[in-house]
Length: 112
Image (tube, rainbow, N blue to C red; front, side, top):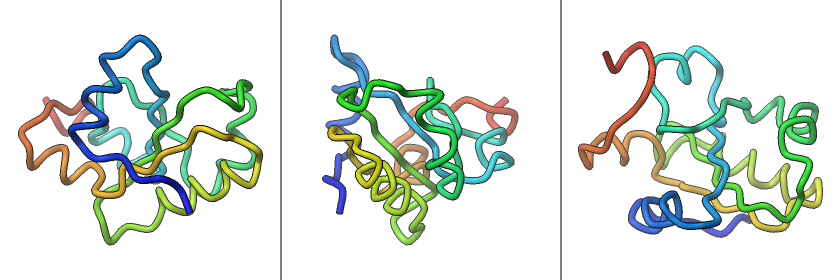
């Protein structure tokens, strides 16, 4: 089970010198609509086949997220990453809804 990261911890980490790669673990249509700034999209069921092409460094910090707390995609993605040998994975369990509810900016077609 991945270590959780809070919204405030994530905000701080994203502005730090070793900012994590953000992965939205939802299907592409949700990513296109709205995603956290700078996030990339790798749906949880494609992590195993896609992630090594995008993130070859298995020690680099990664934060995965999905829609909200009840959504399981980020947890599944984090588990897959850990199984693949990624050692610095955290799960923003509250996800995009928590980010939006806090009034923080999102990117995507649905945010214009």
